[in-house]
Image (cartoon, rainbow, N blue to C red; front, side):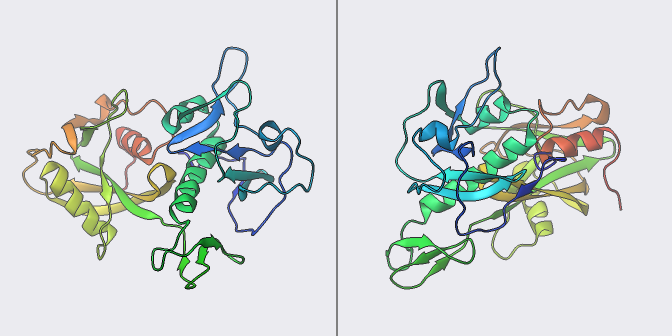
Length: 289
């Protein structure tokens, strides 16, 4: 999965400030587009660096809008929160889902991109206080935004959600989204947790809403950070309880089908919890009660 980056090391411990190195990666977003170099036959895809974006940079120089966010293998990484900079030669904005493919096989970079996107959304959505409208500034002792007028404190928003592998004997329920970008691959029932719900309640509600099935024997599998939707995913398997006839919510799904283990093909990469859960079921290794 995307967080499986060994032997690389990802450290998002808070630091109020850290000086960039000339070749520190810089994440520059324009909505859901990322500035990067597309791969070609001669070179792999790259992220822009401090020296690439700011050719006159020297050690210790302060660059307003450049914010330290985490380290990867002891290399500090930065987020650009200023106006759109001039792109280095050969670099262009591409959708983050395309960048996911560009950096395939480099999970430490894909994890970094997803996490940086999550933080970019949070910083840009909290420039002004939701209580009084005052200007927000970064906290000095932990990752948060502080209102300069009323003192309101805002911490990064993380949306909890579930991925659900619904089983019926040796069959797994696969779904295809009604709205998808580009080629549609099989997925599992999924949805966000509502206020006041447990994860298990979310599993029951989402399965009923999307495919009209009752479930039982709900068991936890794994979790995954997934910055594409600012969320943390909790994976569960469960068994259909009673009638297995699918009643589809066509606002969410284009189709859904019970699929035998040997017929599961999965998704084109191994980054998602969804894909791992599908392939784990195919191998007969899903948790059972």
